[in-house]
Every structure is written in structure tokens, then in C-alpha cells.
Length: 318
Image (cartoon, rainbow, N blue to C red; front, side, top):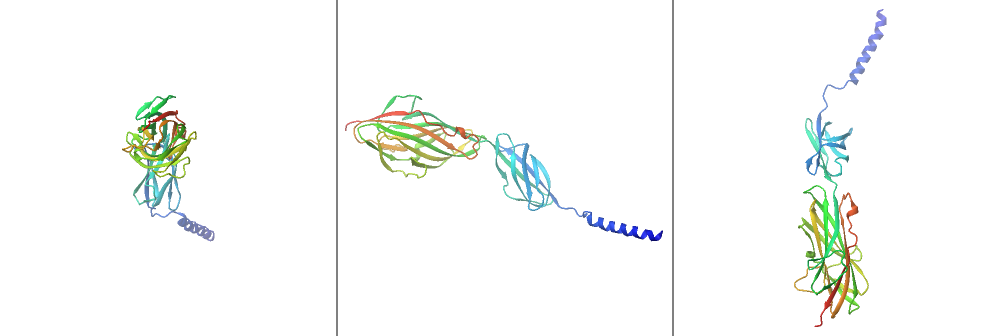
């Protein structure tokens, strides 16, 4: 009997040695906490949202809601791959945007910042002559004197989180034709006065204002001039960039045309010089477009053509 016990003891010893290798160490692995929060329009938000927490090495953690805490290994962690979140909203960014260190027994926070889907819109409202509105749909020929100013008005807005701001790039365009008159050509000068294009209420900022003729590629400097031919239409454009407040209702005004060089400065985009006495007939149409990064509804970014305005400018005999 004693001889048979020897192998059994040998097997038990081997098992004990193997278990010693497989049993985790009693020394605890250091851990910390990652807190994931979310905001909508700057206020705390709770709900379903997907994201991934990724360490410098090791296994990632997938989250499905916020706020939520995770026990995480001491390491450098990033937060990304965000999807879902508040309905009709988009992710502005993650705060902080870079990798963060999770320390032993410490807490590191990532905040997912959402805004309501922003939507820039614009529509033509009316023409004015020296600030006096021209009835929409009117096909009357308006008598205009030298130094009068022809202005186009638009209504625009950026939907989104109230009190937040958006950078909006805008293109305002004019189709112009010298239809009839005593000369075969008239001279047009690009003034592109900064004050000729404004908004009410006053916007937070206007960053740029560039003028283009026909194409959208080469800006034309102020003071550039040349003839336009009777019966031949031209298209001109001014590109501007603005900082606007979301949910604010803006009236955009564009002093497109002046009909002679007047003092003081007319504050217009285009100046038409009419030298020979007689009656000059012009017509014009206007349109505009807005562009916004992350726009949820681009369908309302372009106005289409306005109603035309017909202008008869009489230059008296000297």
C-alpha cells in the first residue's frame, strides 16, 4: 500500500505548483475612473449615445449612454467614435479633445458637446430705392435720378442653439442689363464699399468682402471699371463671411447700384457713370446663397431669382 501512495503525492505536488502559477497575484492592479458626460446647447444632457474609450495599450471600452462612469486601468485614454446622441443634434466636439491620463484612484472626465442641428436659410424680400420699398411683383418702370441708390433686401436666419454663434459664408449676386439708352455702352465701376452690405440687427462680425464678375474665381479690386454693352446682361457677385448669432432674425441689405459719382461717397457696390444726356433703361434681378458647415437643410440655402426691377435714369441736358 505505501508504494501506491508515492505517485499520488507526486501528482498532488504538480497540481499545487501549477495552480500557483495560474492564480492571480494578490497584489491589486491600480485602477482609476473615467467619467463620460454630455451637454446639449451647453446644458447637461442624459441619454443614449455611443462612444469608445481607448487606452494607450490594452482593451477599449464601448459606452452606450451618458452620463456614465467606468473603472479603467491606469493609462493614457482617448474618447472617440461618437454616434447617436440627442435627436436632431450634432457633435460639436469632445472636451478635452486630446488623450487624458487616468491616475490610480483618480477620475478623468470626457464631455461630449452637442448642438441642435444648425440650419442657415435666406430669402429675398424686396427692392428699395433710396430706402423706400418697391412692391414685390411690380413690373412698373421706376424713374431714378443720378445719385439714387438701388438696394436689395433679404431675410436670413441660422437655426440652432439660442445664444450660440455660427460662421456663415454668403454669396450675393446681381444680374444687370443696360436695355436701352442714347449710348451703345455705359461705364461701370466696382466700388465694393464695405458699408454697402449690412445686416440688421448688427452682426457679431463681418470677416471679409470680395467682389467677382461673371465667375467666382478671381476677386476684382475696387476701382476696376469698364463698359457694359446695351442688350448684353452681366452677372456680378460679392462674397462675404459673417459671424452670426443663432436664432436671431437678420435683415440683409445690399446697396447694389448708384448711377453717378456722387459726393459724399454713395456707399454702393457698383457705380454706373452716365455721361450723355437722355433716358437710360436698366433692369436687374438679385439672388443670394448662404453656406454653413454642418447645415442640416441645404435646400433653403439659395433664394432663386428675385422679381426684376426696371429703372429709367434720366440725365438732363447741361
